[in-house]
Length: 267
Image 1 (spheres, rainbow, N blue to C red):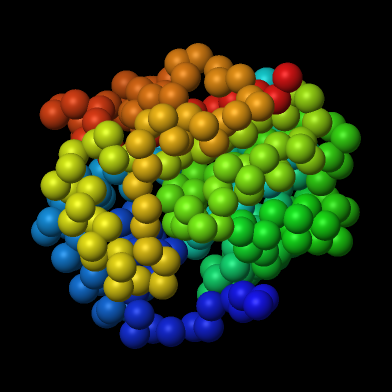
Image 2: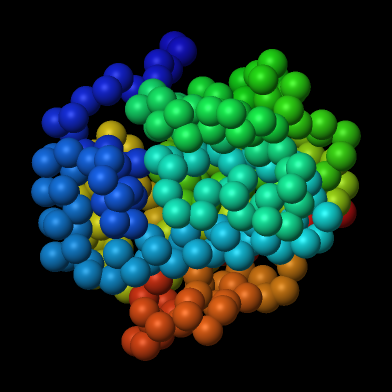
């Protein structure tokens, strides 16, 4: 059976709006705020983790742009926030092409409003669980030349993919469409972090529009099959090529970021 895009529901906590709340945005509702505060009560490190994930995304995009990649496919983009991908990339490569993909209709409305008049940047509807639908989307194909290197961004999205949806096959489907020299950017919540926080977060997210599934370091590393991780490899968020400010929130250790991340190149 074909899965439909989620309908707008202000009464069920929404992962995009929760993320927006943790980043200090304004696009959320009472149900989201209540769930967010419940999460912070159980796992206060989560706010810093979300901000660290956003900072990692920015550093990774800068790295890709400086490495010569000029086109980006950001899947599961979420609501627009500080330092969006096209803004970061174009500081280095003014002509960078960026496609944002999300299945949430509210995210798409906000993204398209932000991108009005931007040129070389678009937002399309797509479900990560069906990568072939994203890759064959006419707007994606018009914007991205898959015969040249592309940066595919999967930040804090794969842990919403159930095991039954075959996450390794999803990433492999994307990998097979990527030209040599392309890069995969991924961050993923891990069970190798603080057990009590992981358990509490998992429980609260069961009441949202997308339950979360933390995975072990070994299983996350397996998602990079067919790619070569660039230095420093698969590490905690604040450990990936940090600026000095990226370590401020993690005096108790980088594992309090709860999320492992990496950038890998297809050879």
